[in-house]
Length: 596
Image (cartoon, rainbow, N blue to C red; front, top):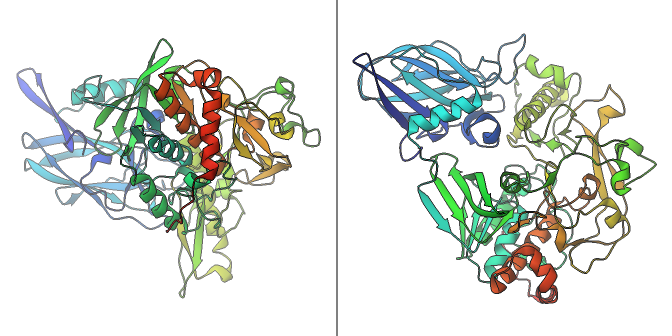
């Protein structure tokens, strides 16, 4: 429920008559049923929303109680989207049920996010139950429901819609609650978890903000990517939060999830804010003053203040909002001399461009003892074409020059869903797969690359290739540098959602501390795939044990920042020996046995 209420009521005076507006935010439903809250694209489309991710089977109704100030006739709109418009029935169709009566009109038909008019309905009681009725199981989505005694449609343009919502809720600019910490970490992937643990073990009071119900990011049970890389100096910490080497997409991720969540929650000085998504950061004089976050279901807002912050969001959101310098895309081959002649433009382009490694959606199916039906999915076939598979590993990835991995993330996820459903439908045509059932499809985008915040050192492919040693080297890795590309670039007949990797064998290499704090925002650390590197430099250390090393390194640096009341850069310029000694100590810390 948002702000402690499921709905917002506004009374307006028009020509001596009262008009009543009731806005119900779908993510705040009392009972989501089989629908799930999806906050991934809030910065792009304006809000979390409810998603009917039934992988082909309609999900249970979502329901909520709504109070009206008065009975009468109301116009009803729903903010929704047809996620695959075309010459077929919309795949994400659903209906609205009001006070036990299902309204005939199918929803989810509009191309692009906006308001669909439902009907004029009679409200006979001041408290009624509203339900969302999924019709397909194929990712119908509902952002909000709006009742009004006037026939004026709400605004659709994103900026006007945001203002309208804010005014309707009488929401003040500043969150009503402020919390202060020694360190605020935003993003609960392995990098953020490791940063929080390291800082907490040194006595810091830490806030860890994460927009999902479970920790781990790409390693979580929701995305199911196993962790790669070595432990470096931080084996004890990383073994608390990493995974076994199960196949990507395996349900065994649930076992490591329990271990990870329990270990992070065991630290009394880590305040964990699950299901909270940061939506803004304010910097003054190049120093972040606060980060604001909102609960993804209730809408409750909190302002977090601290002398220092860690951006482990992956997309570099905190740095972006604060005005940190960042890069996106591929540098030219001349920028850093990152050339592998054998692979030419696939490795580094002659001219810089906006291409980056893509995002994956993992999935799997299982054999059963009976014949299993799967619906026809004509809307998926323009993507899947003739491709037929019963599971998807890391190669299921999408990137294109026309899609920004941040701005177009929802379209990228949806493209992958079409690829999955279509490929499985093709596989089901084979009699050998008659008993096979689609078991699990992630609804989350597993990203590899987007914004890369700029630090005092930009880590490059050549740093890895030559095994360069730095006076402030704090992360160690031996993993090959691998860069992904879409196979359609080699042959246009290949599916556009399948990738391949180029592996360059390197010696042991090191990432300097100077790549883990912002060049121009004085109190900002970064850990994870948004650390300071080039596109080709990201190829090796983007895996999660390596990013976990980054997190631990900045957590320990934050402790020294507090000890001496300095900012991140000053650890390098004035306290480097003590910092390196602190990290060296971690090698000899006893590694306790962990139980899953």
